[in-house]
Length: 259
Image (cartoon, rainbow, N blue to C red; front, side):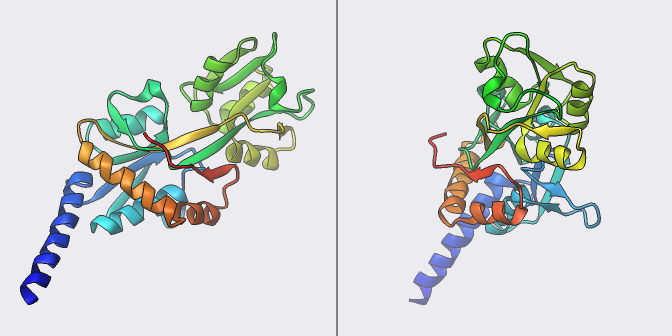
């Protein structure tokens, strides 16, 4: 009996060690995310700790494989991809888009982030359904998920890509009348409208951006482990609870997917 128990404990220890090696080969789980995207996470200015869904998920994954974690905010999608691709991070949090695949592997979707548009207070526009019209200029951050969506789905409006998806870029383009509306995630744009009465957010959402976890290419075992982790986090309602704790609006748990 003792021999069987010892063998079982060794098996569990081996499985944990294997998961550690697959996901965190350096002995520390290094994660990167979009520092300017509050729907993913926010770095506490006093403690430096990353709060929000990304922080909760990374710390839970680290706990499961038995390693400490380091969570780093970076500027831009490409920075997330490059950090994972080049081995400076083990996992990264970005929205899935086919154009971003190739140098990294994407997990299944774990969360959906709703997108909408910011306009000037006096704009005649009221709903996202009014945007795809001739003569309208629709802004988005270059390479941002909503910019990719607009390019594929808007047939009549003109897209104007700013240097980045930041609130500062949105406000500048709108105040300069370079665009009629600027797209981004609902939480980010709602924060702008709350802080500056010269802007408001349109009614309605355009689509839910599929948030995924990326791992380096050529590591199928790591991808399998991350997908199983997401399945567990969804089934246990851990992701739902993390979203509720974050207080972020326009975010919801994604249904199971094949990717």
